[in-house]
Amino acid sequence: MRTLAFDGRMGASGDMLLGALLAAGADRDALAPVEDAASLDVTYAVRTVEKTGISATAVDVLLTGDGTDGDHHDHHHHDHTGDGTHDHSPDAEHGHGEDDDGSDEHAHAHDGHTHAEGHGPHRTYAEVVEIVDGLDLPARVAADARAIFEILGEAEAAVHGTDLDDTHFHEVGADDAIADVVGACLLLDDLGVDRVVTTPLSTGGGEVAMSHGTYPVPTPAVVEIAERADWALRGGPVDAELLTPTGAAILAHVAEGVDRLPSLRVDTSGYGAGGYDFDDHPNVLRAVVGDGGGGLQRDEITVLETNLDDAPPEVLGGLQDRLADAGARDVSIVPLTMKKSRPGHLVKVIVKPEDADRVARRLAEETGTLGVREHGAGHRWVASREMETATVTVAGETYDVAVKVATDAEGTTYDVSAEYDDALAVARETDLPVREVMRRAEAAVRDEGGGTD
Image 1 (cartoon, rainbow, N blue to C red):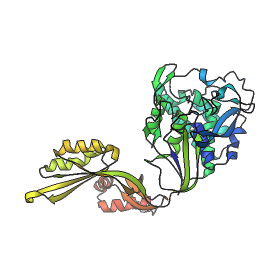
Image 2: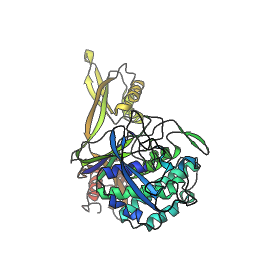
Image 3: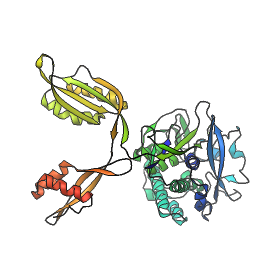
């Protein structure tokens, strides 16, 4: 499976994603639909910069006109809206802050063009979608761009307590933000990868000033977007805004979360530059493209266990749910013989390393054990699992049964398993054996036509 993996230790923004995708092999010419659009007065300036010793690709969105539009203003002086949906840090979409030579990059134009940040009206969600639909884009690229702006719109609506249709974008509705989102979708399409993943995304730290007050990093919109995403957030490593709403929204739509970079046979790699310069941290977003192979996925875990010789059956029966609530991934209880030939039980719990302390405490509280052993961090090989809904028809009536589908990294299905509780409920209503309901549901998912009498 051809995989694109982002290393999110320095966050992400629209510009950084554009730079990383270009550096990883996407074709610069793929951006032509944005630059040729009559509705957008922008072009992309691509250059190579150095960030703490690492050569990286920087992308600036520039006005192709004279930059005298009354809506255009220098980013350092524009009015923040207070919703956290603008991308305003030097690390963000438009290379804000200082250039590598220490000069203020907003004090001059690039090749006669002006920076496009904030250019254009502050549009509604519907107006942004109309612009996207009017571009000459492949259908899948347009669908991805619309989905990303929907994520941004829902985040802003949640911050303001409004509906999506009533929501006005601020900075992320301007020409440059549209160029960032659509450009990223075009470059991703050009790379032709089957899967996109990202390690936990660093947000930075500190505070940012907006018109409604001073807010901590991550900004409210980033937090809202993270709730909808598959990946994780982490703070630091510097006091600056590293993860912007546009970067977060793009990755929320396209990327799965992983704990660390997956095993890849690397084909290409590259770095997208952010605008900040730090002494000890290269401000770059790394992108790695390669073949992920067809095996199972590596999942980092640790194992907790304890021996019990006096736990009542009711306590043992409730451990699965109680430990799962605390973060356990799996719980096994095995009968054994303990000292003085007393019957007892071995409780083994699989957890993520970061959840071990919390789950061990819950295990001790629930059972009264005086000690919990930890086997140390290791890993397990796991399948990708998705739930599908199968429709089973019995005597003209239809019933839904959840079915778990297991696949390897190539997307090849190797196990289909109906959920027992759903099948039992159908069996009780139809008087069919549970095994027959499960067989029909699994056959329906396999497209074998076995879901009907």
